[in-house]
Length: 346
Ligand code: MRU
Image (tube, rainbow, N blue to C red; front, side, top):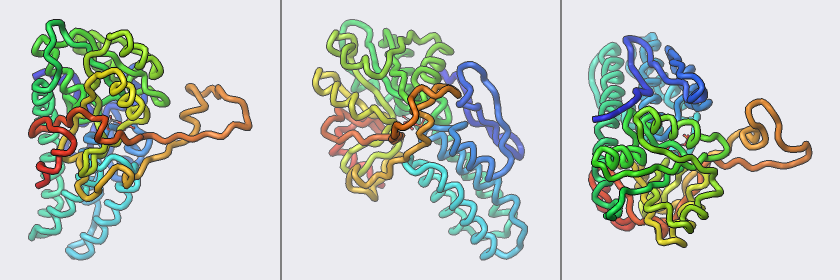
């Protein structure tokens, strides 16, 4: 199955990350050898996208764990918790980060064995999270085929941000559905929102499509309503950073307005995400912490300031799309109406 890029690679004693801040102008690999470097790579978005930061944080825990010098289990666990706390502080919205760290910590806490054995267990768990994510995304892509509109022509699908191979262990969630539709000869065109302010759509989604020969048209974010009014869009498929028990979904800023516009034009609006993105501990989207990033992302293009002095800025990185605007949530176990998501609670 096609998977154009491995954004995260484990290699002996280090993690290789494709530096996503440089794409598409350069495809440079960064070597991460310490948990501090991993925390910084997540914070600065060298690696980004909810599942990808979960996988990276799990490897980060191992990089930290292997440096802990003790034979005492209690001291080891205390130091490991401090490393986990550093990794948890990097980005607040994507629940996969916390899900992956919690999974590793629970596995270690439940295990018996000496310190080298616990260290090996952490690496094995990180590798399992990594491998499972690739298989999960491929399943999400294929589950999406069941709910995409059946029309005589090939589909035109609009997506926002980058929920592709780069944002996961490979294949992608929203872009996974798009990849599967392409494989099945059901896709005619992807419309990629540019996704201000960091431009993940124009820099990353278009790049991934071009790598695989998937036809892609880039638009500015404010062109989506016009495109729907012109009947250019058959479906919207986006990813998610955290979905609450009632089916509200946090995703890249601009997703909510896209959902409103899709509803106004009777265009189906799908959220594609693994069940690890569902936070069943939160009842609704109002409880999701929304990351605010450096205002420079808004007032600068590259290193050039584009706004006068004296202006104030607000830079929320995510918004919450209420469940009633979502046609279906596509998971690895199937696509369901948002109010049915609760049936997947483990
Ligand atoms: O700020 P980013 O680039 O990490 O935001 C990414 C998104 O919003 C994605 O749509 C989401 O994480 C899903 S990735 C499969």
